[in-house]
Image 1 (tube, one colour):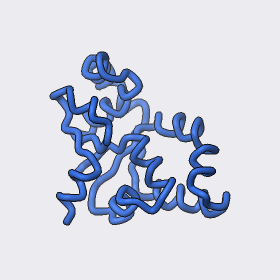
Image 2: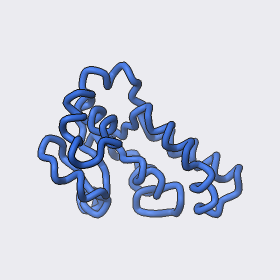
Image 3: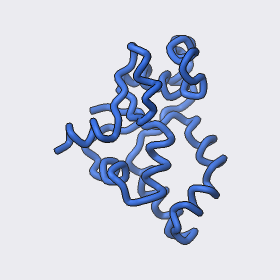
Length: 136
């Protein structure tokens, strides 16, 4: 399955050894992150490191290991889909525009636990519990 991963799913995989981390590390799916993810990651990295209770070295290794499971989608690839994505999420959460654009560009579903994103009908949104059911 091709999945664009919401930042919060990735962040939860960093914070604890969770189902999200296991799904990512299994490498059964083609996983994408838009380039914009790194802006959010840098904004929250100190808080994530603290919540994870890992040493700085352990945290950096985990980040690297998890990122190795992803294909990073560059800005240029999202340009053609950005307007449609803005329209899709304008009444939900404009901060998700580039994740939706990534879904459109890669013809992928969105892995997110944000229930509000399911209100739109253009992109399939799959939650962690739903994804777990499909991988068993």
